[in-house]
Amino acid sequence: MKTKLVFQDPATLATPLLAVFAADFSANSESLPAVLLTTNDAISKAAAHALGSGEFKGASFETLLLHAPSGLKAERLLLIGVGKVGALSSHELRKAAGVAVRFAKPRNIRDLAIAFPDYHAVSDDALEGLPSLLTSRALIEGAFVADFDPDTYRSDRKDQSMSSVTVVSLPLAKSEAKSAEAELLQRGFDEGVILGTSQAFARSLVNEPGNVLTPTELGRRAKAELEPLGIATEVYSTEKLHELKMGAFWAVAQGSAQPPALIVMTYTPEKATSAEVLGLVGKGITFDTGGISIKPAEGMEKMKTDMSGAAAMIGAMRAIAQLKPSVKVISVVCSAENMPSGNAYRPGDVVTAMSGKTIEILNTDAEGRLVLADGLHYAKQLGATRLINAATLTGACVVALGLQNSGLFANNETTLEQFKAATAISGEAFWRLPCTDDYREQIKSHIADIMNTGGTRYGGAITAAMFLKEFVGDTPWIHLDIAGTAWQDDQKPWSAKGPTGIAVRSITEWVRTFAV
Image (cartoon, one colour):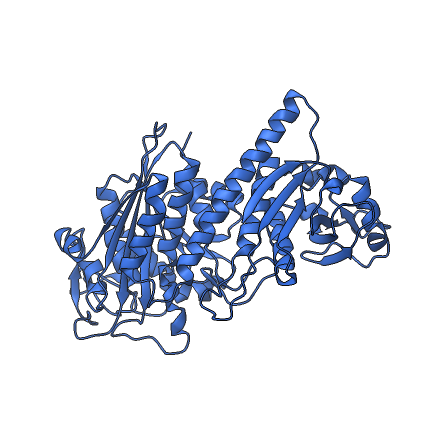
């Protein structure tokens, strides 16, 4: 998809479809249910009848298509609601831009223009806090999120990808202040392209079936994507796991005919302004049967998504390579299949992790925490001073938080606040759950140091986090449980059903908070 930002009167732009946002203004005005986020007279006149009639109210994701709009060079004018004017945010605009793309795709419209929202069209004070850089970035991110479709293997597939998306902003007068504003818009737009394409790459990995995306193939694709961008990428397998004594990782991998992959990606800035080394660790189970503790057949096809944490880290490293923050980043992905076989590990086994801790296996379907245990410890050995991991780790987290929020655990308040600042920009939703030592009793083992489950169904997301905490020590750490958010069962107005690429934007932004 070609993208560009232009500074031009949107009424003079020749395009098959011009999208303009409108906010619900009913609480602010008795006469106008909706108001366009533009001060352009020609667009306002073209939409005047629809707005005046009350047919269009500006509700979130509401659309109204006007053909051959008078006074515009666009063939069609699409009004898109963004909800209550006082609640407007860059996150809502990201979704609204996605609505424009999802509206165009099935109508065989391949070229689209989006009018940059002009907040001077309304007088609500809440809009003063919407930075132009974040707005520009959000618009093009939303376009990339919306352009993704999961129908890769359909024999009758019709490619509905957008050919081009143009964001059109009103011309800026020539002055030092306006020139700086134009630079901010362009910078935000460029960042949005990088983040949008990186999230799309992560989604493409998660979308692949397990017979295609084996651990070896995941390593190959990561290396092929990242090395041309300057990320040193090494892919190891069985021999390296034995050399490093990664007994927890190997326990999971040994039941599959497919060899495991230990993927190590390193970003080294030209000039580091931070002494920190950030460690990004991802769970890369390319297919999870549950092993000997086999899962029910219903829904098992989605277990190809059990490498979504790994995909998030690879996508983040792709973005980091191009955004070039001045902090060193090391990412470790532990990838394997969890299969039942004569070689598979069993409930009751005791395995020794790379750190030397012994683990009693209660359930072989609690495998993600085992591979992460060795991945987190290895990242520390490679020099990481702060850690973040992402994993589709527990169904318990889905029970606790549903499908809207990912679980968030942390052992360090400063690192947590930095992540919260990152999510305020990324727009991704996380909810903190406890990870305190009073939960540790649940994972104590009588035969080994710890057990790989809490022994009961209570607090499963927390006991999984407590397990990981054992391998972090005093290193500041964040754990993201994305089990409920990595896959979307229903199509949204701004996004197709399927993989979401959750956490790519947040992890990347978290890394950037250290680049001072």
